[in-house]
Length: 256
Ligand code: KIV
Image (tube, rainbow, N blue to C red; front, side, top):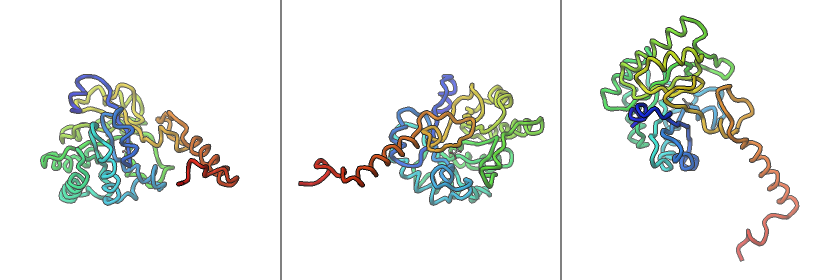
């Protein structure tokens, strides 16, 4: 399905979701929904994605599954769950069996190529993730855009080649200089899903909470489509006022 969309040249719409209710809302407008390990930062408020455990992502993905009817559903493999071929296979199958998702995503290029190949041979749909790799970062301050020099540029291209040869059905390209992203898009035969990459990718992905405006500070690649933080504050301020002034509950809110 994803490869067909690449041929049609329509950019893929991808977003993250962590529960049934947001998944239900976004499903109609997305091609792919990711239960990302950004869960650690955007939902639990941790300083990196490394804190997310296998059981946690499975719990959230089970909830998301209930809300996804048409989009492709992909689940991130958490940090430390795909160090070897055997633990990658065991954990990927556990995620797929327990959540009924369509495939998994894992971070890493050349260094993870053998693992991706092994999973693909075992009939597991794998989405790659190259460029900036959040699981390599211990705290927010060390996020750094990739492709600043020739060495970094070559590494991203090598990573793309390795992931592509391994049989990944799509690749997330995160946090790279635009000129590097454009080179990747040009040479790639695999759909490239950009986040902080460039226009012209086969699709774009963002974290739902980021585009809704939950957070004051967001990376440059995020566009806020709503300021939900203000909306929540307004509603809660009104509720607080009404409770304190005995204006709530009204007759409409009590059982007669
Ligand atoms: O964890 C995540 O949500 C991600 C995407 C934003 C690409 O990896």
